[in-house]
Image: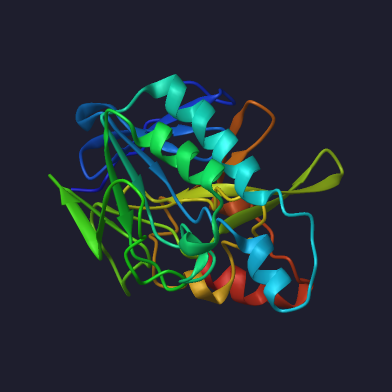
Length: 251
């Protein structure tokens, strides 16, 4: 039986999709809430990316961690979940959790207070964060869902992952719009990067090949307090030279 996608309201601040029989509320801020398990998911926070750049001699404003946690705090306050899962690359490098200041450590502890907190290991941060609340895991199974950092090759029913920082590009009213997005076909959900200082990858890029049934695919674009569901046939690649590959994939 094909996995269903139910888009109830369109262009709303949240859109609920059905993933492996489980309702998922995709929030315009880039987090996903699972009501049945009272579980909230963030992906790719990349905390301390600014300080990682500074260590290599590239100096950028060092406010990304504070901004990311402030945004996450608003989402947590809205849903007040029993469980928070961070889907890997929560820190930009494996020493990032050791570079955070006491104020940030206190902020994370406040966000985790009264709830379970899971740090999924990512390729940027494979070690367990020290002196921070919560537990660390390679992946976590909850009912029919599996939470991990990187998508596995081929079909994976109920997989919720990050890593690829999905974005979608569409032509709208004569101009191009490119936004971070949730990527799903009702079987797998790839989360957008939540970090304030992260890049993104077009869902039509080769890295997404073999991960979705493109006949069922939807990109849920993050807008200003809105999410915009876009069918695969309306998406465009970042480079004009990629059009033929895109046509073959969507055929």
